[in-house]
Image 1 (cartoon, rainbow over the protein chains, first blue to last red):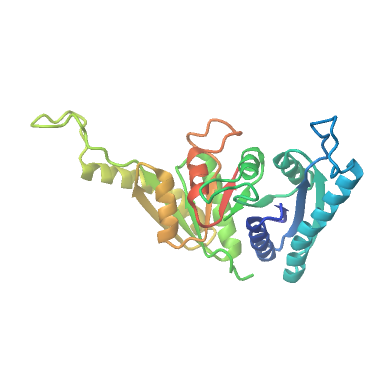
Image 2: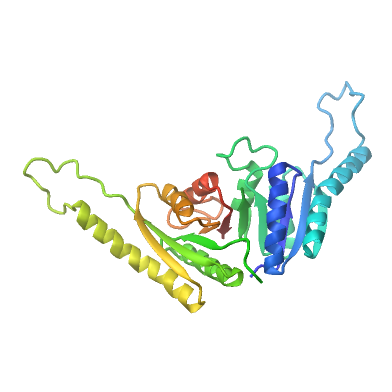
Length: 147
Length: 153
Protein backbone atom coordinates (compact mmCIF):
# COMPACT_ATOMS: atom_id res chain seq x y z
CA UNK A 1 0.00 0.00 0.00
CA UNK A 2 2.82 2.41 0.86
CA UNK A 3 6.03 2.27 -1.11
CA UNK A 4 7.89 5.47 -0.23
CA UNK A 5 7.65 6.89 3.26
CA UNK A 6 8.97 10.36 3.99
CA UNK A 7 10.28 10.68 7.54
CA UNK A 8 10.97 14.28 8.50
CA UNK A 9 13.01 14.68 11.67
CA UNK A 10 14.18 17.56 13.83
CA UNK A 11 16.31 15.35 16.06
CA UNK A 12 14.01 15.66 19.07
CA UNK A 13 13.00 12.72 21.24
CA UNK A 14 9.42 12.42 19.88
CA UNK A 15 10.79 12.55 16.37
CA UNK A 16 13.31 9.79 17.16
CA UNK A 17 10.41 7.66 18.36
CA UNK A 18 8.54 8.41 15.13
CA UNK A 19 11.60 7.27 13.16
CA UNK A 20 11.58 3.91 14.91
CA UNK A 21 7.89 3.43 14.18
CA UNK A 22 8.22 4.56 10.59
CA UNK A 23 11.10 2.18 9.93
CA UNK A 24 9.26 -0.75 11.46
CA UNK A 25 6.19 0.13 9.42
CA UNK A 26 8.33 0.43 6.28
CA UNK A 27 9.73 -3.03 6.90
CA UNK A 28 6.25 -4.52 7.18
CA UNK A 29 5.10 -2.65 4.11
CA UNK A 30 8.31 -3.42 2.18
CA UNK A 31 8.63 0.29 1.58
CA UNK A 32 11.64 2.56 1.37
CA UNK A 33 12.29 5.32 3.85
CA UNK A 34 13.37 8.84 2.96
CA UNK A 35 14.85 10.72 5.89
CA UNK A 36 14.47 14.47 5.66
CA UNK A 37 15.74 17.39 7.70
CA UNK A 38 14.98 21.08 7.26
CA UNK A 39 17.65 23.38 8.65
CA UNK A 40 17.21 27.08 9.37
CA UNK A 41 18.41 29.39 6.61
CA UNK A 42 21.21 31.86 7.32
CA UNK A 43 19.89 35.17 8.53
CA UNK A 44 21.35 38.65 8.66
CA UNK A 45 21.72 39.84 12.23
CA UNK A 46 18.99 42.23 13.20
CA UNK A 47 21.33 44.68 14.91
CA UNK A 48 23.43 45.44 11.92
CA UNK A 49 25.75 47.96 13.56
CA UNK A 50 26.81 45.58 16.23
CA UNK A 51 28.26 42.35 15.00
CA UNK A 52 28.27 39.73 17.75
CA UNK A 53 31.55 37.83 17.93
CA UNK A 54 29.79 34.49 17.58
CA UNK A 55 28.10 35.47 14.29
CA UNK A 56 28.53 32.75 11.70
CA UNK A 57 29.23 33.59 8.11
CA UNK A 58 26.79 32.01 5.61
CA UNK A 59 29.45 29.45 4.83
CA UNK A 60 29.99 28.55 8.47
CA UNK A 61 26.26 28.44 9.01
CA UNK A 62 25.78 26.01 6.13
CA UNK A 63 28.58 23.84 7.44
CA UNK A 64 26.95 23.79 10.89
CA UNK A 65 23.57 22.84 9.42
CA UNK A 66 25.23 20.13 7.36
CA UNK A 67 26.79 18.70 10.50
CA UNK A 68 23.48 18.78 12.39
CA UNK A 69 21.69 17.20 9.45
CA UNK A 70 24.28 14.43 9.30
CA UNK A 71 23.70 13.69 12.97
CA UNK A 72 19.90 13.71 12.81
CA UNK A 73 19.68 11.84 9.52
CA UNK A 74 22.31 9.39 10.73
CA UNK A 75 19.70 8.17 13.22
CA UNK A 76 17.31 7.44 10.34
CA UNK A 77 20.01 5.65 8.34
CA UNK A 78 21.05 3.59 11.34
CA UNK A 79 17.51 2.52 12.18
CA UNK A 80 16.82 1.64 8.54
CA UNK A 81 20.03 -0.34 8.19
CA UNK A 82 19.27 -2.28 11.38
CA UNK A 83 15.82 -3.18 10.02
CA UNK A 84 17.05 -3.89 6.51
CA UNK A 85 14.93 -1.16 4.99
CA UNK A 86 16.20 0.73 1.93
CA UNK A 87 16.80 4.32 2.91
CA UNK A 88 17.98 7.61 1.51
CA UNK A 89 18.35 10.92 3.27
CA UNK A 90 18.33 14.56 2.29
CA UNK A 91 18.38 17.92 3.96
CA UNK A 92 17.49 21.40 2.80
CA UNK A 93 17.58 24.89 4.26
CA UNK A 94 14.22 26.55 4.67
CA UNK A 95 12.42 28.94 6.96
CA UNK A 96 9.18 26.96 6.80
CA UNK A 97 9.79 23.27 7.51
CA UNK A 98 6.21 22.22 6.71
CA UNK A 99 6.47 23.74 3.24
CA UNK A 100 9.74 21.95 2.52
CA UNK A 101 8.32 18.68 3.85
CA UNK A 102 5.22 18.81 1.66
CA UNK A 103 7.28 19.86 -1.38
CA UNK A 104 9.82 17.11 -0.82
CA UNK A 105 7.07 14.50 -0.50
CA UNK A 106 5.67 15.62 -3.84
CA UNK A 107 9.10 15.82 -5.49
CA UNK A 108 10.11 12.33 -4.40
CA UNK A 109 6.73 10.75 -5.14
CA UNK A 110 6.19 9.68 -1.54
CA UNK A 111 2.85 8.10 -0.65
CA UNK A 112 3.03 8.59 3.12
CA UNK A 113 4.54 11.08 5.55
CA UNK A 114 5.34 9.63 8.99
CA UNK A 115 5.83 12.41 11.49
CA UNK A 116 5.83 12.89 15.25
CA UNK A 117 2.85 14.63 16.83
CA UNK A 118 5.23 17.27 18.07
CA UNK A 119 8.95 17.93 17.92
CA UNK A 120 11.02 20.57 19.61
CA UNK A 121 8.30 23.11 20.08
CA UNK A 122 5.28 21.00 20.96
CA UNK A 123 4.94 21.99 24.57
CA UNK A 124 2.48 19.42 25.74
CA UNK A 125 0.85 16.15 24.90
CA UNK A 126 -2.37 17.97 24.35
CA UNK A 127 -1.09 20.15 21.56
CA UNK A 128 -0.19 19.12 18.11
CA UNK A 129 3.16 20.53 17.01
CA UNK A 130 2.96 23.56 14.79
CA UNK A 131 4.82 22.05 11.86
CA UNK A 132 2.91 18.78 12.15
CA UNK A 133 -0.45 20.51 12.03
CA UNK A 134 0.69 22.55 9.03
CA UNK A 135 1.93 19.43 7.28
CA UNK A 136 -1.46 17.83 7.97
CA UNK A 137 -3.34 20.69 6.41
CA UNK A 138 -1.07 21.13 3.37
CA UNK A 139 -0.21 17.54 2.53
CA UNK A 140 -1.92 15.88 -0.40
CA UNK A 141 -0.99 12.38 0.80
CA UNK A 142 -1.84 10.46 3.99
CA UNK A 143 0.05 11.42 7.12
CA UNK A 144 0.86 9.00 9.94
CA UNK A 145 1.03 10.98 13.17
CA UNK A 146 3.05 9.13 15.82
CA UNK A 147 2.67 9.82 19.51
CA UNK B 1 4.74 -10.46 6.46
CA UNK B 2 3.55 -10.75 10.02
CA UNK B 3 1.67 -7.63 11.01
CA UNK B 4 3.37 -6.92 14.29
CA UNK B 5 2.92 -3.23 14.38
CA UNK B 6 -0.79 -2.77 13.91
CA UNK B 7 -3.18 -5.50 15.02
CA UNK B 8 -6.45 -3.67 15.40
CA UNK B 9 -7.25 -0.64 13.28
CA UNK B 10 -10.01 1.69 14.39
CA UNK B 11 -11.81 3.44 11.58
CA UNK B 12 -14.37 6.00 12.67
CA UNK B 13 -16.75 6.94 9.90
CA UNK B 14 -19.60 9.35 9.42
CA UNK B 15 -20.60 7.96 6.05
CA UNK B 16 -19.27 10.91 4.04
CA UNK B 17 -17.32 10.43 0.82
CA UNK B 18 -13.95 11.26 2.36
CA UNK B 19 -14.52 8.97 5.28
CA UNK B 20 -15.47 6.15 2.91
CA UNK B 21 -12.04 6.63 1.37
CA UNK B 22 -10.50 6.34 4.83
CA UNK B 23 -12.41 3.07 5.27
CA UNK B 24 -10.94 1.73 2.04
CA UNK B 25 -7.45 2.77 3.20
CA UNK B 26 -7.95 1.13 6.58
CA UNK B 27 -9.20 -2.14 5.11
CA UNK B 28 -6.36 -2.28 2.58
CA UNK B 29 -3.84 -1.62 5.33
CA UNK B 30 -5.43 -4.22 7.60
CA UNK B 31 -5.23 -6.76 4.82
CA UNK B 32 -1.53 -6.14 4.31
CA UNK B 33 -0.79 -6.08 8.02
CA UNK B 34 -3.03 -9.07 8.74
CA UNK B 35 -4.83 -6.89 11.22
CA UNK B 36 -8.47 -6.56 12.16
CA UNK B 37 -10.67 -3.56 11.56
CA UNK B 38 -12.98 -1.97 14.09
CA UNK B 39 -15.57 0.28 12.49
CA UNK B 40 -17.08 3.01 14.62
CA UNK B 41 -20.01 5.29 14.12
CA UNK B 42 -20.89 7.97 16.62
CA UNK B 43 -24.49 9.11 16.64
CA UNK B 44 -25.84 12.22 18.32
CA UNK B 45 -26.62 11.97 22.00
CA UNK B 46 -30.21 12.02 23.15
CA UNK B 47 -31.20 15.43 24.41
CA UNK B 48 -34.12 15.61 26.77
CA UNK B 49 -36.66 17.99 25.37
CA UNK B 50 -36.62 20.95 27.70
CA UNK B 51 -40.09 22.03 26.75
CA UNK B 52 -41.65 18.68 27.42
CA UNK B 53 -42.82 19.09 30.99
CA UNK B 54 -46.05 18.37 32.70
CA UNK B 55 -48.63 16.68 30.60
CA UNK B 56 -47.76 18.44 27.40
CA UNK B 57 -45.74 16.26 25.17
CA UNK B 58 -44.94 18.15 21.99
CA UNK B 59 -45.49 16.43 18.65
CA UNK B 60 -42.24 15.04 17.32
CA UNK B 61 -40.98 14.21 20.78
CA UNK B 62 -38.49 11.37 20.72
CA UNK B 63 -38.02 9.26 23.79
CA UNK B 64 -34.62 7.99 24.81
CA UNK B 65 -35.52 4.52 23.63
CA UNK B 66 -36.79 5.74 20.26
CA UNK B 67 -33.64 7.83 19.85
CA UNK B 68 -31.42 4.84 20.60
CA UNK B 69 -33.29 2.79 18.01
CA UNK B 70 -32.87 5.52 15.40
CA UNK B 71 -29.15 5.82 16.15
CA UNK B 72 -28.75 2.06 15.85
CA UNK B 73 -30.56 2.08 12.51
CA UNK B 74 -28.55 4.99 11.10
CA UNK B 75 -25.33 3.48 12.41
CA UNK B 76 -26.08 0.10 10.89
CA UNK B 77 -26.61 1.76 7.51
CA UNK B 78 -23.25 3.56 7.64
CA UNK B 79 -21.33 0.65 9.13
CA UNK B 80 -22.68 -1.72 6.48
CA UNK B 81 -20.16 -0.20 4.05
CA UNK B 82 -17.32 -0.94 6.48
CA UNK B 83 -18.49 -4.51 6.91
CA UNK B 84 -18.84 -4.98 3.15
CA UNK B 85 -15.37 -3.58 2.45
CA UNK B 86 -13.82 -5.79 5.14
CA UNK B 87 -15.67 -8.87 3.92
CA UNK B 88 -14.53 -8.23 0.35
CA UNK B 89 -10.92 -8.08 1.53
CA UNK B 90 -11.36 -10.99 3.96
CA UNK B 91 -10.39 -8.86 6.91
CA UNK B 92 -11.92 -9.62 10.32
CA UNK B 93 -14.18 -6.77 11.24
CA UNK B 94 -16.21 -5.63 14.20
CA UNK B 95 -18.50 -2.64 14.10
CA UNK B 96 -19.63 -0.56 17.01
CA UNK B 97 -22.20 2.15 17.15
CA UNK B 98 -22.31 4.54 20.09
CA UNK B 99 -24.09 7.72 21.07
CA UNK B 100 -22.18 10.82 22.07
CA UNK B 101 -22.33 14.57 21.75
CA UNK B 102 -18.59 14.75 21.12
CA UNK B 103 -17.47 12.22 18.51
CA UNK B 104 -13.74 12.70 19.23
CA UNK B 105 -14.20 11.62 22.83
CA UNK B 106 -16.06 8.49 21.74
CA UNK B 107 -13.37 7.76 19.15
CA UNK B 108 -10.55 7.99 21.67
CA UNK B 109 -12.56 5.99 24.22
CA UNK B 110 -13.36 3.28 21.68
CA UNK B 111 -9.69 3.05 20.70
CA UNK B 112 -8.79 2.44 24.31
CA UNK B 113 -11.66 0.03 25.01
CA UNK B 114 -11.08 -2.07 21.93
CA UNK B 115 -7.30 -1.88 22.32
CA UNK B 116 -6.80 -0.45 18.86
CA UNK B 117 -3.23 0.43 17.96
CA UNK B 118 -3.96 2.69 15.03
CA UNK B 119 -6.74 5.10 14.16
CA UNK B 120 -7.34 5.73 10.46
CA UNK B 121 -9.53 8.70 9.71
CA UNK B 122 -10.24 11.28 7.05
CA UNK B 123 -8.72 14.72 7.47
CA UNK B 124 -12.19 16.18 7.37
CA UNK B 125 -15.60 15.06 6.30
CA UNK B 126 -18.94 16.59 6.94
CA UNK B 127 -17.90 19.78 8.63
CA UNK B 128 -14.45 20.39 7.11
CA UNK B 129 -14.98 23.39 4.91
CA UNK B 130 -11.81 23.33 2.93
CA UNK B 131 -8.78 21.27 2.03
CA UNK B 132 -6.64 23.65 4.02
CA UNK B 133 -8.37 23.06 7.30
CA UNK B 134 -8.13 19.96 9.37
CA UNK B 135 -11.53 18.71 10.45
CA UNK B 136 -12.54 19.52 13.98
CA UNK B 137 -12.89 15.91 15.05
CA UNK B 138 -9.65 14.87 13.35
CA UNK B 139 -7.63 17.55 15.09
CA UNK B 140 -9.15 16.73 18.47
CA UNK B 141 -8.52 13.02 18.01
CA UNK B 142 -4.95 13.85 17.07
CA UNK B 143 -4.55 15.83 20.25
CA UNK B 144 -6.04 13.21 22.56
CA UNK B 145 -5.13 9.86 21.04
CA UNK B 146 -2.38 7.83 22.63
CA UNK B 147 -1.94 5.67 19.53
CA UNK B 148 -0.69 6.69 16.08
CA UNK B 149 -3.25 8.28 13.79
CA UNK B 150 -3.18 7.90 10.03
CA UNK B 151 -4.84 10.94 8.50
CA UNK B 152 -6.09 10.29 4.97
CA UNK B 153 -6.54 13.14 2.54
